[in-house]
Amino acid sequence: MIYWIFAGLTFVFLAVFGVQDLLHTQMVSATILHLGYPWYFCYLLGAGKLLAAAALAYPKTRLLREWAYAGVTFELICSFASHSFVRDAWSQRIVPLVVLAIVAIAYRYDPRRPQRS
Image (cartoon, rainbow, N blue to C red):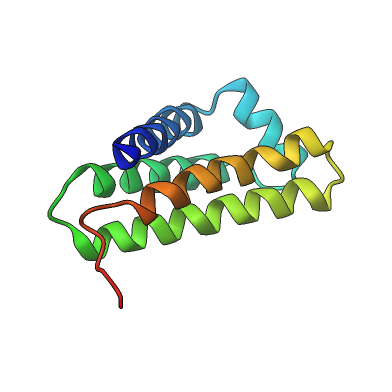
């Protein structure tokens, strides 16, 4: 049950923000430019998020699922770092870490994750 709740939240995050990135919404554009990245970076992030969502949604992609979790983790850590470098408020800095905690719980309880002893 824990897995399905946190996996659902992870999937919703990836799908919603992936689409917003690809559509280059005003909020996304303003944030990307504020952080100092070029405008086309939105398309790279959006495509990555939607590909990660697809990999996590398809149950027979063990290796791709691992890469998706790794990519999302990398993106969220970089998001936290980027907001920190431009000295955004802590309320903006902490959001990627909260999402990262949700993703980490989904990963930990993923029944298709390779079990390590």
